[in-house]
Amino acid sequence: MRPELKRRVKTKGPDRTMAGAPATGREADKPGSEKYQRILDAAVEVIAERGYFSSPVSAIAKRAGVADGTIYLYFKSKDDVLRTAIDETFNKFHRQVEEEFKTLKGPREQLEYIAQVHLESHAVNRNMAILMQTEVRQSARFIAEFSHHHLVKYIQVVREVVRRGQQEGIFRRDVSDGVVAHCMFGAIDELLSSAVFTGRVYDAKATAAQVMDVLLNGITAGSRE
Image 1 (cartoon, helix red, strand yellow):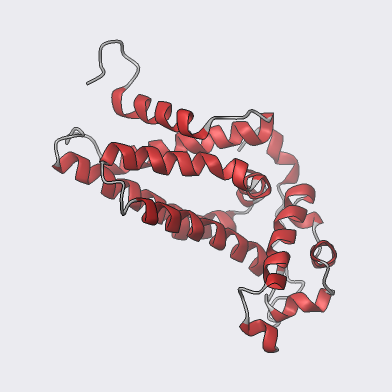
Image 2 (image 1 turned 180 degrees about the vertical axis):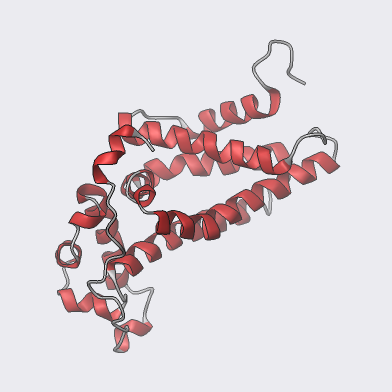
């Protein structure tokens, strides 16, 4: 764990402020509504600014411009709001990649595109990037949920591209597609951490190309194919 993050580590369990409160009412049937999105956006902003345990539901409601009780119409707890915000962010990421893959067929180009979209996430939604690099990492439960859902899917997509590249003779067959996928995620994730903690700005497309160049060709002079 990064030293600068230790100050927020807590052993406190899941937030129970609204745990078990079922979503009710007509608005609960409209998860895509403008108010629903305002609550999600407000939650990400507030938690990124104040930290998860210092962000009561009342603060999220105030930022969203709704009454505290309105959040009950959509979510069961603060945990549920955060989980939904993360789910929607990564579902959008995967949809974007799937759509681009309809026309982008080369394994190398596909890997570069995944890396580029991953890096662009900091510029697209800086608050979510902060939240993912700080708050989520303080909770073993959220890390486990993220790993079992979104990280598994990310790794699987990369592995499939690598395997296809191996079958086509583009990539070496004597390397593990799983190792390549984890190395790729780890490299991009570390760059995002740098962007969050130092304010460094990356050219997503150029940096993604460089990361993949290092990953696929190494750094030894004369090793490029």
